Length: 97
Image 1: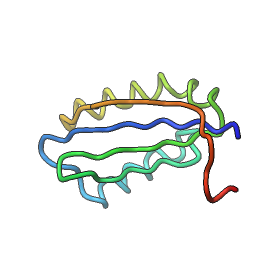
Image 2 (image 1 turned 120 degrees about the vertical axis):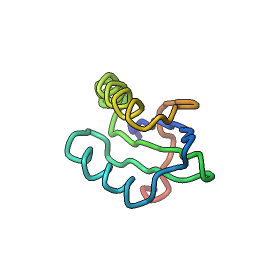
Image 3 (image 1 turned 90 degrees about the vertical axis):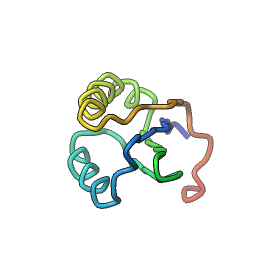
Protein backbone atom coordinates (compact mmCIF):
# COMPACT_ATOMS: atom_id res chain seq x y z
CA UNK A 1 0.00 0.00 0.00
CA UNK A 2 1.48 3.34 -1.01
CA UNK A 3 -1.05 5.67 0.60
CA UNK A 4 0.12 8.36 3.00
CA UNK A 5 -1.72 9.93 5.94
CA UNK A 6 -1.51 13.33 7.62
CA UNK A 7 -3.04 13.65 11.11
CA UNK A 8 -3.61 16.96 12.87
CA UNK A 9 -5.15 18.13 16.12
CA UNK A 10 -6.62 21.64 16.46
CA UNK A 11 -7.70 23.86 19.35
CA UNK A 12 -10.55 26.35 18.92
CA UNK A 13 -10.74 28.95 21.73
CA UNK A 14 -14.30 29.94 20.77
CA UNK A 15 -15.52 26.41 20.02
CA UNK A 16 -15.26 24.07 17.06
CA UNK A 17 -17.30 25.38 14.11
CA UNK A 18 -20.59 23.72 13.23
CA UNK A 19 -20.72 20.64 11.02
CA UNK A 20 -22.35 22.77 8.32
CA UNK A 21 -19.47 25.25 8.44
CA UNK A 22 -16.88 22.47 8.26
CA UNK A 23 -18.71 20.83 5.34
CA UNK A 24 -18.75 24.15 3.48
CA UNK A 25 -14.99 24.42 3.94
CA UNK A 26 -14.62 20.89 2.52
CA UNK A 27 -16.65 21.92 -0.52
CA UNK A 28 -14.30 24.88 -1.06
CA UNK A 29 -11.08 22.82 -0.91
CA UNK A 30 -12.34 19.64 -2.59
CA UNK A 31 -11.37 20.67 -6.12
CA UNK A 32 -8.05 22.19 -4.94
CA UNK A 33 -6.44 19.17 -3.31
CA UNK A 34 -4.86 15.87 -4.31
CA UNK A 35 -6.17 14.32 -1.10
CA UNK A 36 -8.29 11.22 -1.60
CA UNK A 37 -10.22 12.09 1.53
CA UNK A 38 -10.17 14.53 4.43
CA UNK A 39 -11.97 13.60 7.64
CA UNK A 40 -12.56 16.14 10.40
CA UNK A 41 -13.95 14.90 13.71
CA UNK A 42 -14.80 16.58 16.98
CA UNK A 43 -13.03 15.55 20.20
CA UNK A 44 -14.73 18.05 22.50
CA UNK A 45 -16.31 21.49 22.15
CA UNK A 46 -12.90 23.15 21.65
CA UNK A 47 -10.90 20.43 19.86
CA UNK A 48 -11.10 18.71 16.51
CA UNK A 49 -8.77 16.33 14.70
CA UNK A 50 -8.29 15.52 11.07
CA UNK A 51 -6.98 12.71 8.91
CA UNK A 52 -5.98 13.40 5.31
CA UNK A 53 -5.35 10.43 3.02
CA UNK A 54 -3.17 10.85 -0.06
CA UNK A 55 -2.46 8.27 -2.75
CA UNK A 56 1.28 8.70 -2.18
CA UNK A 57 3.89 10.40 -0.01
CA UNK A 58 4.89 12.46 -3.05
CA UNK A 59 1.36 13.92 -3.30
CA UNK A 60 1.36 14.69 0.43
CA UNK A 61 4.76 16.38 0.28
CA UNK A 62 3.85 18.29 -2.89
CA UNK A 63 0.78 19.73 -1.19
CA UNK A 64 2.49 20.44 2.10
CA UNK A 65 3.55 24.04 1.29
CA UNK A 66 0.09 24.83 -0.10
CA UNK A 67 -1.54 23.28 3.00
CA UNK A 68 0.66 25.39 5.28
CA UNK A 69 -0.18 28.60 3.40
CA UNK A 70 -3.90 27.81 3.44
CA UNK A 71 -3.72 27.11 7.16
CA UNK A 72 -1.94 30.39 7.84
CA UNK A 73 -4.76 32.34 6.16
CA UNK A 74 -7.49 30.34 7.89
CA UNK A 75 -5.86 30.56 11.33
CA UNK A 76 -5.57 34.34 11.00
CA UNK A 77 -9.33 34.51 10.32
CA UNK A 78 -10.51 32.16 13.07
CA UNK A 79 -7.94 32.25 15.89
CA UNK A 80 -7.69 28.46 16.15
CA UNK A 81 -4.30 26.80 16.50
CA UNK A 82 -2.63 23.52 15.59
CA UNK A 83 -1.75 21.37 18.59
CA UNK A 84 0.11 18.68 16.65
CA UNK A 85 0.71 17.24 13.20
CA UNK A 86 2.03 13.81 12.31
CA UNK A 87 2.33 12.01 9.01
CA UNK A 88 3.42 8.67 7.66
CA UNK A 89 2.76 5.75 5.35
CA UNK A 90 -0.59 3.97 5.70
CA UNK A 91 -0.22 0.36 6.80
CA UNK A 92 -3.77 -0.80 6.17
CA UNK A 93 -7.24 0.50 5.35
CA UNK A 94 -9.93 -1.91 6.44
CA UNK A 95 -12.29 -1.12 3.55
CA UNK A 96 -9.53 -2.02 1.10
CA UNK A 97 -8.49 -5.43 2.42
